[in-house]
Image (cartoon, rainbow, N blue to C red; front, side):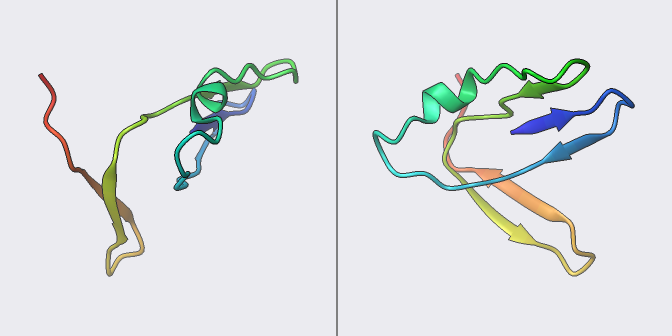
Length: 65
């Protein structure tokens, strides 16, 4: 999920969720604080790791059609 403040600064979180826990509801979030935006980056299964330079890297485990 990505969150953008009124200054245009973006922040992202990554999380893992089990089945039937409300992932779709989270993907439809609407911020209530004026000037803020929120977006769902993806709902896909992926592999994530942190590089030696402390960057979060990911690889999706399915193919787009």
